[in-house]
Structure formats: structure tokens, C-alpha cells
Length: 218
Length: 218
DNA sequence: ACAGTTTTCTTAACAGTGTTAACTAATTAT
DNA sequence: ATAATTAGTTAACACTGTTAAGAAAACTGT
Image (cartoon, rainbow over all chains, first blue to last red):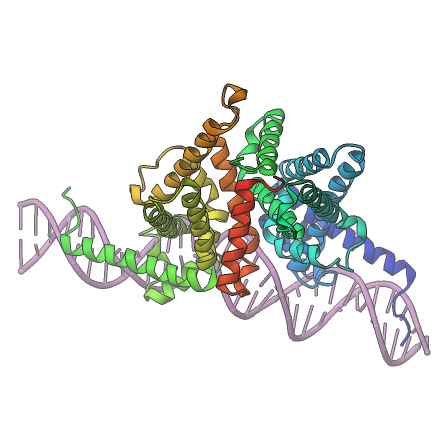
């Protein structure tokens, strides 16, 4: 039976696959994922639409590839902020990471939409068990974010009035709650904030994060 | 020139319009708005697709009609909770309203998706100026929710350590922040919570609202 | 009652979408 | 050189929203 493919062919196959992704990414970033079509990609790479189906099972799988790219970029951003703010207080670090989260969504609205609208279920699955289909770098940011929240919540739990005995806050749950809230903010304001200047946007986000951590009422 | 339409025809025209909406709503509620197609609607109402275009300019306008129906239902729900909890404390009332918000999203996932994903910009526009295309009942819930938050935030502002002088919290902004956070919660968990029993879901939502109002850290 | 106007609805098509079966051309393995 | 595998194309299927043009029915004014 043999391996069936020569080295040279494997190379060009990888190249075509790469060019498909590249073309899809181009269309996706300029028009949003809903305007990515197999025929448009085919036009760009100068092949017929059918050829794409020899490299991806279907459109969903191709979009998933774009999701991976965007999610990896997102996670590298968050991760970088984490390591840059190691000597700051926990609260400052958390705040910086959440702001980076928000800024990414504003700077990369297309990626944000794909990640947090279309593939939100995959992100959630990612958080529960580390996926073996991704390398660590591609999801570590989210883990570091969770870890930072957990550490901070646990710390406050210890320092607070120790009368309550057992911890009444589930730190994991608290972290997820915080995440959902921040994600809600990005979802709500990413269509609105696009027309607004960067500095104003950042200050707005800072006030949000601040109120979130301190509570809306207290 | 004349009015051009007899009374009897106006009636049947309204009836057809109603049957279109009815069919669209049926398809929408069982399959989600993405699976609503002009031809499927036409099949159900026993007309050709073209006929629909004599009652609605395009699909978007038809979906907008479904949005209005869902948003009105949503607002009546929130409004009812407001008036039912008038003798409770402000915080209890706010909590009850936010929980109703979350429960609506879980009970009516299709409506939630249409309102808070596809037409979120229209909701935001709604909050800034009352739309004359809708009757008061159809958006009052959101206003009452905002009002409740504002009142509560303003109250805490007064009661708190008065050392700060001027109010450092913009109550409108605080209300919107709270709203985005709650909406983020519903967006995140409405795919997850569907498989989970109602009571568990409610308690989960209660913990979220509680942490949100008190702050994740304090 | 008849002619003319208006409204209502259909037929047929256009321009897209994702996807697949069947076929050809080229490359590789034995 | 022959057989097997791979790469790529053509052509079609079953959908999608939308529209131009025409037919049929209903209503209007005389």
C-alpha cells in the first residue's frame, strides 16, 4: 500500500491549505465571518470550490481553523499582560488583564465575534478541560485569567471578617461570573465603541472593571 | 384616485399579514431565526414567496416584527415583576427583576437570541430615546429596570461615607454596566443551562446577581 | 353593465449559498 | 509499463433572498 504521498506533494498540499486559510482570513477580517463563502475563497486562491473540500471537511471546519487562530492570538495577548504585571498587586494585575480582554475585542471585532458568538461553546469547553487539539499557548491566557481571579477571591476570603467559618464563595464560580460580566460588556459595546476614540473607550472600560470588582452598589 | 381598498380587502390583507407573522413565529420558535426562510413561510401559509414581499419589504423587516413581539413580551415580564415587588426593598426589587431577566432568556432562548444578538443595537437605541414605533408597554420594562438601578445606586451614594463630596458614580452608567453584566451572564449560559433543572439554574443566577451587586471581591 | 384602474398573487428567473457525485489528468509505486 | 493513488475540475442538487413581468381578480367611475 505504501505511504502514497511523496514529500514534494505533501509540501504543496500544506501550501494550498495555508493559502485557503489565508484567503479565508482575509475575507473574514474585512467582511466578517458571515461573508466568507467557499466560492469567494476559491476565486482568490484560483481553484474551484471543490478543491477546498479536499483540505477541509466543510465550511464549519474551516471557520473553526479561523477560530483557533483568533483564539490563540487572544490568549497570547492576555498571557503577555499577565507576565508583564507580575510585580503588581493581584487586583492591578486582574484589572490589566480584563482591560486587555476588552481592548482585544475592540481591536479585533471580527475575531471577537467568531470566538465569543459563534464558538462560545468551544471556549467554555476549553475552560473545563484543556483541549489536546490546541497547544498550551493557545488557551493559557484564559487559564491565567481564571487563576488570577481565583487567587484574588481566595485572598479576600481569608482577609475578610473571618466569622463566617467555611468559605461561602466558590472561587471558580466567582471567576466565571466575572468573566461572563466582562464578556457581556464587550458584546454590548463592541458595536457602539467602534466610532469612539481609543482613550475614551479605555477609560470607560476602566470604570466598568472598577465597578465590577467593587460591586455596583458598594 | 380613491382610497383604492375596500374594507373587506383591508381585513383580509391584515389577516394575511398576521398569518405570515404567525408562520414565521412558529418556524422561529422551533428552529431559531436562522432557519426562518421566505419559502418555508410561504409553504405554511399556502402562498408563493413573492406574496410575502407585498406585506414586508424584506426578510429583515419580517424579523424585526418578530423582534418587536419578543421584546414586548420581555418588557411585560420585567414590568410585572417591578409592580409585584413595590413593597420590598430596592435591592430585593432589583434582584427580582434581574432574575426575571435571566429566566426569560432561559425560557425563551429564541427570543433572547433575536433580541440580544441580532437586534442588540435596536435595544440600545431604545434605551436612549423612547421609540415612537412602539407602544409604551413594549419597552417600559427596560426603563423600569434602569430606574430601579439608578435609584438604588443614588441611595447608596447618599448613605455611604459622605467624605467624597461630589458623586463619583454616574448612576446611568452604573445601570448600564449592571445591565451588560447580566446580559453577558445570559449570553454565556443560555446554551449551557438548557440541559439543567430549573431550580438549580435559578440558584446559580441568584448567586451571580448577588455577587454582582456586592462586587466580586468585596 | 361595461371599461378602466387598482390591487393581489403567481411564474420564472437572477444571483447567490454549501455540498457532492462523477470524471479527468497527473503523479507515484510496484 | 502498468496499476494505484492523488489532485483537481465539471456539473449538478438543493437550498437561500429577491425581483421583474404578467395574469387574474376585485373594485371604481360612468
